[in-house]
Length: 157
Image (cartoon, rainbow, N blue to C red; front, side, top):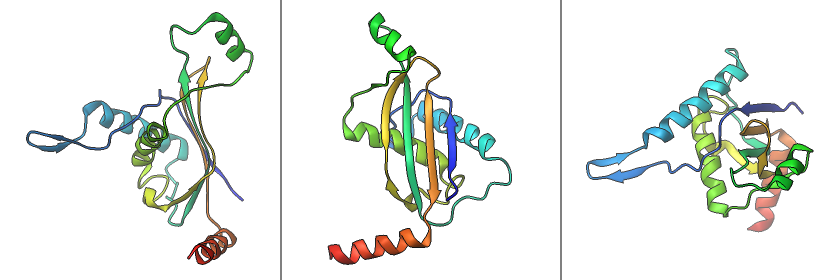
């Protein structure tokens, strides 16, 4: 199985896709800039010959790496620098909104549409002593996996 891996060097953010204003809907300028930067780095990493996935996609790993907060105790900083993984707590909807911004930016580039994502196996939010960023590892769903999904759907109904 061939995996596609992307590392985006950006501080992850929770994204609200759309807002309503007095004169209709709009998207915040900071959100637009955030998505453009993700897309720029992904285009660079994938290369000009990349063809978006046209089939279903499985997300094997999605890791959001945050900088340590300024008020982090020294012992935590030292443990993170020595390799200890320090997880960031958040609500599930925050996690979905972080993934939403990433997948919106990758629409038409990594995959034709983010509706093609059928499974997301591992999501983590961690603090890092190094560079903040987003790590994504995915692969196109093969025939055997499609057959398994159909069998599972059949059993559930």
